[in-house]
Image (tube, rainbow, N blue to C red; front, side):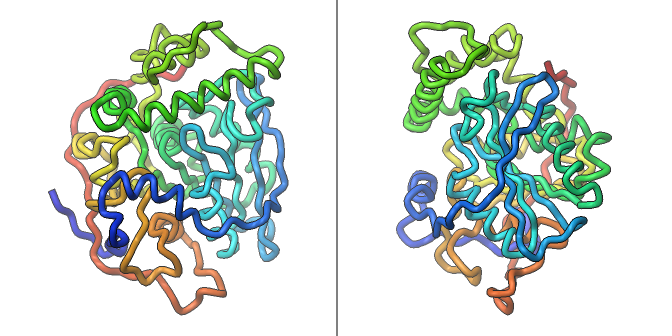
Length: 360
């Protein structure tokens, strides 16, 4: 299925980086310029008494009431992940204040949080939103989520619309795993075990370190640790959050059942060749008319390294996030190189009925 829109320029992969794996892995090599850390970090108290850390980048031109963007990283990411740093930097140069969230167990939250990342942690995001509301009550807020962070953003917008409506007026979710059951199956399939092994290895390393240093860590006490993601989530993550098992956790944490209820203008960016997130899920999803799906044929998972482009650099994904956020202005140093309006592969998917789930 091909859908055309003039909202976003088409993605042309860099020569030699057409395959989904070269795009996905290449994004870790072609990271872009890494600016010196200059944010102010703060601890945010969460709804259940736990805590996490956020990183506040405030441009010199920003004044109270100006826009704020909240950025959520992907699984095993953190505030310093290349895609988070690049996007925050572009938004900062456009005068937008950014709040980069280290979700439970990752980044600077590793030894601050007692519980673990919840793949559908809407209430954690609501706690961050309340924190931002106290920083600047008059500011409009944009949400940006990458991979599992995108799933959290979408689930929050759909399930907690009345809570986010007063503040949030735009959102972007990049490569979100909207159906965690199917994504888990996909990672365990042929050709994708490399990614699964990476996630499990990183999560295992994090857990070992946290077991030594975090007093009161929520820990089911599994030994030895599983080597498959679904087993890790079944024996640790699900148990830590009070679920009966991984499938119970995955079904509850998935954003797919809530996409039809989103009332905030939202853009989902998802490559049709993503090796981590099966694209057919988006074709079957019931999307609100407030949601636009931007689906390039290529791009991999959080890759989108462009060849032919009129953007200031090759990171097509970053510029589409900036373009999608309402009222984002082009940074002064790149004025005149404004976004293209060539047709892009986009779409809205057919509707289907879905059951309602609850958040533990």
